[in-house]
Image 1 (cartoon, rainbow, N blue to C red):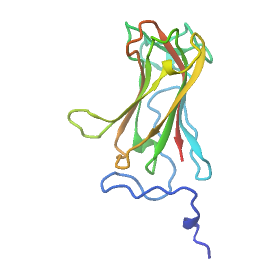
Image 2 (cartoon, rainbow, N blue to C red; image 1 turned 180 degrees about the horizontal axis):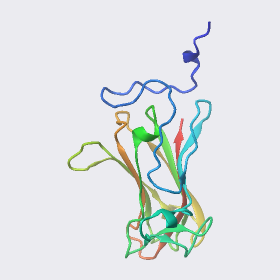
Image 3 (cartoon, helix red, strand yellow; image 1 turned 180 degrees about the vertical axis):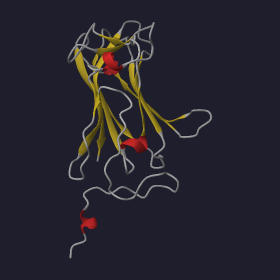
Image 4 (tube, rainbow, N blue to C red; image 1 turned 30 degrees about the horizontal axis):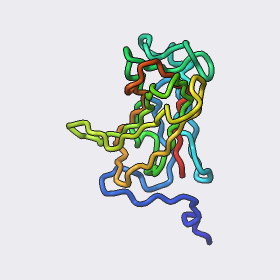
Amino acid sequence: MVDLRKKRLFKYPTPPAGAGWRRGAGGVGLALLLAGCHYHQAYPDVREHRVFFNDFEQMAGWLPEPAPTLTTERAHSGRYSVKVDSAHPFSITYHFKLGDKFSMRPRRMRLSAWAWVEESGDDAQLTFSMSAPNDPQNKSKLYTQVFLVDNWPYKRWTHVSRDIDLPPEVSSQAEVAVYLWVNSAYRPVYTDDWELTELH
């Protein structure tokens, strides 16, 4: 009899003690902490799967009060996008705990979006941060950005992305945040259709 456990296409290394990961190939637990995000379940016979996607079309009706960074001034799809400027340097933020999305430790992710930047000096950044659990100083264990001005042309919607390698000692309790930061941009910068994908 063939041992089907040896036929798994993707193997994850054994997590460090206390990391909190389950060793079996269970279903992916999910808690959508930001309304308007759509989820696609992972299967072991695919090369990637979507962790979240947000086109911001449902956000206006779900937020407790109007968000100043949710705008209809420009949009890549639908009516809404996210905008940052000097008055509102941080956008609405997507939060999740790593263990709520994955039963086994992910190794690599890809963060992507569509961005509208007026000029090269408007260097806003789409940011991915992951904080260690129970850290009294709230230090980021991982902090990386998608640099929007690195992609031409300007004054039109352009697709941007960056691959993110997660540290091997990451805990299932790690907190992830994705948000747009104005950095030193002095004109409004827009993003739409955020997507985070796990890469096998």
